[in-house]
Image 1: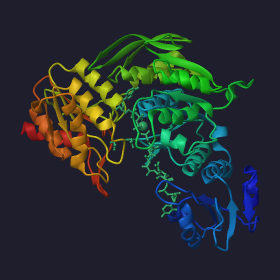
Image 2: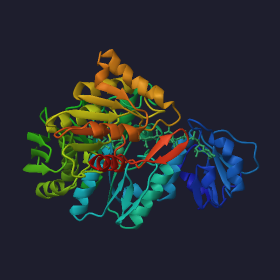
Image 3: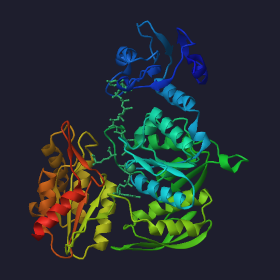
Image 4: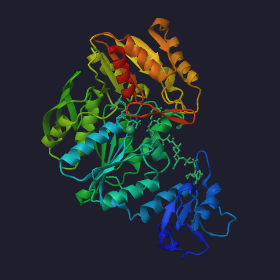
Length: 495
Ligand SMILES: CC(=O)N[C@H]1[C@@H](OP(=O)(O)OP(=O)(O)OC[C@H]2O[C@@H](n3ccc(=O)[nH]c3=O)[C@H](O)[C@@H]2O)O[C@H](CO)[C@@H](O)[C@@H]1O[C@H](C)C(=O)N[C@@H](C)C(=O)N[C@H](CCC(=O)O)C(=O)O
Ligand SMILES: Nc1ncnc2c1ncn2[C@@H]1O[C@H](COP(=O)(O)OP(=O)(O)OP(=O)(O)O)[C@@H](O)[C@H]1O
Ligand SMILES: N[C@H](CCC[C@H](N)C(=O)O)C(=O)O
Ligand SMILES: [Mg+2]
């Protein structure tokens, strides 16, 4: 494609040089440039892509997209906003893949992965060729691909959607993080349905305040587009958790039709008669398409919310309520989310991905419902992430647990001992006595200790890392899987 044809989508872009330059690819990372690429220079949070222009040209880039003209003899396109240009060009280069399929996005602090997996299962069972993008993986056509982030960058996203479209995917369900919204990773992507799970504290390292975090997620709903179309395929839906106060704010921002779900308040899709046990969770769903009883294998009242969101999104795709219920009932659960570790021991060991105050509160309330005896909690907090959530999570752990072992999550570049102390501050502030908690920096030792302490009927909750198979300590990526470590500890104890 000629550069000037590609630039058709940007009204105010100025080409300095040869507009007939042939562009065969796009890249915004000099380390991945291929011959014939247009290199898009992004001013980032850590680096400035303009500083890598020369390297990109050495690797074969034939033109640059910049926000200030560089003193390099090569064709350059000057724009005001390189991130906007990236999203628009990626969409155009890959021929608007989101327009040719149905796209459902899920945003919120907690429950995105779970809800996404539920929708994926329901749609596939219904015979719709469905792709998925999220924290766990990207998958389509029966193949899974590893991912490095919850929501890919604009370029990777449009490329992936284009591959999906070519392989016959009809619907894609994906997680949309607040970082992605803020950075325009999904800008211009044509979503049919935007699902909101909940908004509670997280990522206050990245967003300046909870208000700004709320606003970032609001972008998903304000950008959703117009609900009013004679063509049912072009209508837009915002599926909102009516029990979360942010829904009211988002409902005002969107021109999509709002479909509500919830437990405590009147809703289009509402759960009644909820009962939670160690074996699963029962509820009756009352919906705008009738009622149905659902027995989930997944444990926890919060999973009722995830299931309701999935029911609403699937009903909007025309899936019959009975089929939705059948799919939900056969779901074994999502890896690393309230996942039991069983090695024949007389106490429960649960691995869960709770890494926010609200996530931890929810999973611990669930543990309270299923524990016959004590709750022993092992958890930590990630480094280079929201520091203000650490003491709050300490307090929440103490509220519900009999015994706590504070340990490392992914310390990243931070001093692990300091993170443990930040969590401990929350316990000290509550006057929690020393006998109820200890600090064990090494996560393996911490898990081992909790399992050695457990008695019949107890629950050991290992929170924060869920499905992760690594631990990030300083600049090292170490093999680490809570489920494997827990199994080893149980076997060690039985010997
Ligand atoms: C804060 C943040 O989200 N940063 C992301 C962002 O970085 P950035 O745009 O600031 O990039 P940068 O590193 O400053 O570099 C600027 C530009 O120079 C380029 N560059 C850089 C170095 C080089 O040698 N050559 C080169 O061309 C880069 O490719 C980039 O285009 O774009 C990069 C690539 O496009 C991402 O890798 C990076 O994610 C970082 C690693 C990250 O940790 N992000 C997390 C916080 C994140 O996004 N998390 C959410 C989930 C949150 C949730 O739980 O809800 C997610 O969606 O995964
Ligand atoms: N609807 C919910 N409300 C509150 N907590 C939840 C909910 N669903 C899941 N959780 C808790 O949050 C944890 C993470 O769930 P999940 O992976 O589905 O969320 P996520 O939003 O995808 O997280 P991430 O932002 O890391 O991608 C779970 O392990 C559970 O402890
Ligand atoms: N998507 C979340 C995941 C956190 C998982 C936790 N194990 C950690 O490393 O902090 C984040 O990047 O903040
Ligand atoms: Mg996720």
